[in-house]
Length: 218
Length: 218
DNA sequence: AAATATTTTTAGACTTGTCTAAAAATATTT
DNA sequence: AAATATTTTTAGACAAGTCTAAAAATATTT
Image (cartoon, rainbow over all chains, first blue to last red; front, side, top):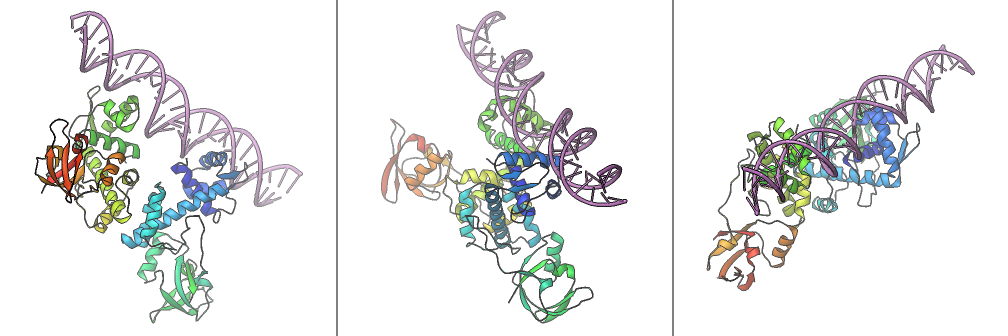
């Protein structure tokens, strides 16, 4: 049995360690979870004893195969619920996260299976992140940061790197959503700002924005 | 802030005390929650300190107005989720409860508001129990136990008293669902069994069944 | 109404997960 | 490579919620 707290630690290790591949430091986890390093030390020892993580004192922690499976399952649930909240209950980008964070811990295989079917087997969540399948497999798409696109490239917005409420609200305000098509009409070398055209109207976005928006080339 | 455990105790007191009106004994709560009386004693003291319950030592416990509001809100959430599971995710009567028991604790006003709208403001859950409105008001319907119906009464099934998995499966097997119309064709005084007709086919049900099925007169 | 049985409460212990403060290990400077 | 800084771990304490065992109150018998 995996407790709710354990699930949250496993999830944090998974995300901090790039899909659970990399080693993660105690402090990094403490920061992510807003707890103290001492609490992390205790928990990481526990996860290791339960076989969810490999851990040597002072050397950070990595998820085991079993730990990764748990993590990917939580991610699957989280993202399916995000689709539900967005598509069926009209939640906006920035309202989704907190609720999905609670819903992801509901335990019922059937629930997720049926929800998946009800939503017609979505492949990506509203932030453009891929939804792992029942076996934990993740299918990713060819995406680049908008800042890496070239002048005259035509791109489609497929995801965000920063999913903070502020950033999502910014995008909303400027009419940028998943699926929005845009053209890069200029890149300013001085401050790395980018001029883009959406629906024949042109505007300038800062490098910071361009660095947090994933697009694919059309 | 109401903890998950507190919510569960409040809910138990509410149900055991007939919509929170009656006084409930420590032992009754312990039995319902599958804990020990000593744990109940502690918690009931805490609920009373927090203003959710009135409690005098050795005299049992009653919900305050505030406690009742919390309870009715949980009931509302529980029943809305039951409708969702049943109507949208094709859960059967007997699979619903466990999952709804988890979902009822998710905290988000907006979630419940939107879910209510998404389900088109249902008035009753799949077991026939009324769904309290946003202000906690419960609208009940004129229902009687099937055992109280008279010979030749034509009735519509509107709810169950016992919602155990076994009972619900029994009903399913015999083609009895909410909304099913049936006619009482005979009552046997010896064992209080009842003969009913559904769709022109007649069969006999025991007094135990008739005592757990709510109907309204057509 | 005394004796017995049942219910309820208290006291003290245990678990999970948290914290602070101090000690130990590792990293970085100089 | 010694000194300093940072990270991580340990030790001990605390809160929530649970339990067992014993004491106190209430209910039921006889």
